[in-house]
Image (cartoon, rainbow, N blue to C red; front, side, top):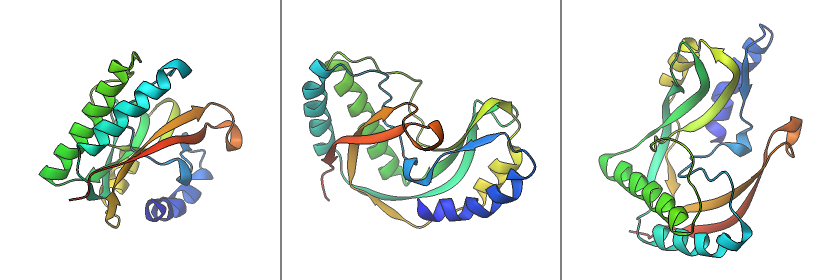
Amino acid sequence: MEDLDEFLDVRRSATAKGGDALRWSLPEQLHVTLAFLAEVPDRRLDDLEAGLERAARKRTAFSTRIAGGGAFPNAARARVLWAGLDLTDDSHEELRRLATGARASANRAGIAVDGQRFRPHITVARTGRPTEVTSWMRLLDSYAGPEWPAHDIELVASHLGEGPRGRPRYETVAAFALDVP
């Protein structure tokens, strides 16, 4: 993810002077969210961890790289600018099943899963209001980073407003290894 940050850094600096409306994600906070859980009661944590460990063991580690990009809900009225993942058919299926397993683990533990259907991406920036981001999407479409191994998943707690510049602070609660082929 450092490579993506370096690729974007020069471009972020150039647009910052022009009052760019994007709030960029910090490099150490870049991640792929398998399931968003707004609230996890302490009494449910052990069940969630056990379910995530089972889900991870059922999936096989794979390699991917960051490539391309897009925006939610669309380029003309973006609230989120994201980078994509370059996945083979097999690795896409492993990631999809891993997300399904993570969501099922939360549901079995009695924890509500927020969000829409799973769309693998890495949020690189957010906007305070709907913003036109076509030029940023074109830039991300020209990016293809180095390959990296996806060999585990992490359960991460988000502490809103406790990070640098009032951003969230992320804390890894537990990590679960994927099966090695």
